[in-house]
Length: 114
Image 1 (cartoon, rainbow, N blue to C red):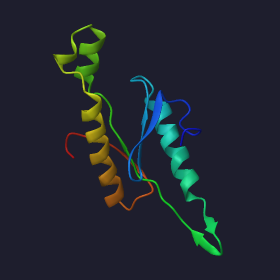
Image 2 (tube, helix red, strand yellow):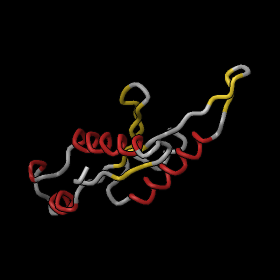
Image 3 (cartoon, rainbow, N blue to C red):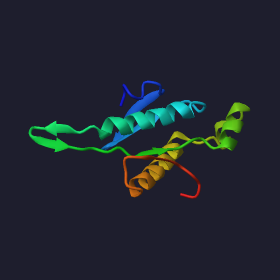
């Protein structure tokens, strides 16, 4: 993941089989390209001894909402509505479960409707 997500600001294991990659606000395209690369990497079958093993990756993607970005760019304080890292991780987790419920091995962007 660290090699695939090299364009990100940070990569971290957040628990069990869940990992997080952090990208700059204006780098949505890189985040989506990385998501596709991760999905493709996990589609490759590998072997443990004689047994073939298939692993899938489901991604949840959360983006700061527009109002939060505008507030931050305007120099307003953190309390002005900017999404916290924990809130973004919560949203990404929700989106990931939607991806899994859609059959897995895909990614979903968080929406308020979720």
